[in-house]
Every structure is written in C-alpha cells, then in structure tokens.
Image (cartoon, rainbow, N blue to C red):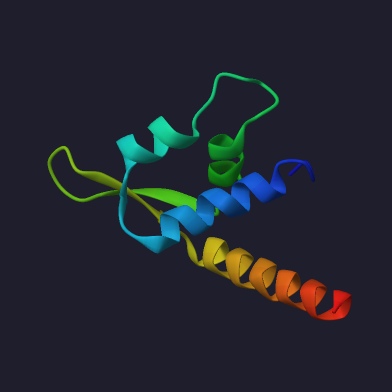
Length: 86
C-alpha cells in the first residue's frame, strides 16, 4: 500500500470498527473515482475489510482478523510515537 494512503485506510478502519456500517454507507463515504485515492479498494485487496451478507438486501462491512491486527498495531505504533516525543 502506498505510504500516503495508510493514514486514510487507518481512518476508514477506525470508522468501521466504531459501530456496524452498511456496505452502502461505507461506499458512500469512502469510495472515490480518483485513481490515486483508492482507500476502499486497497483495504479490500489487502484483506483488511470484507463485505458480509446479513440476509436479504442487508450487506455490512466488517474488519477481518488481519484488519483488526493492522488496526491494533497502528494504534500501538502511534502511542509509542507520542510517548517518544514527550
């Protein structure tokens, strides 16, 4: 993943982790037609998020195990960076 997209992917994953999100809400908020800003596509390609069929027309987006690990690691890394700067 390009380094420039990592903070955006992290933001999206934190947003998804806060509460259940429908696929429509995720796509509305995070999909873009800009070829340089592929946050949703990169997160899917990296196996960090997945669509989950909830039955009928209900499709949600959840973090995968890899996505949860990525999110925890980035949070620890950010906290460590803040501690070193103090």
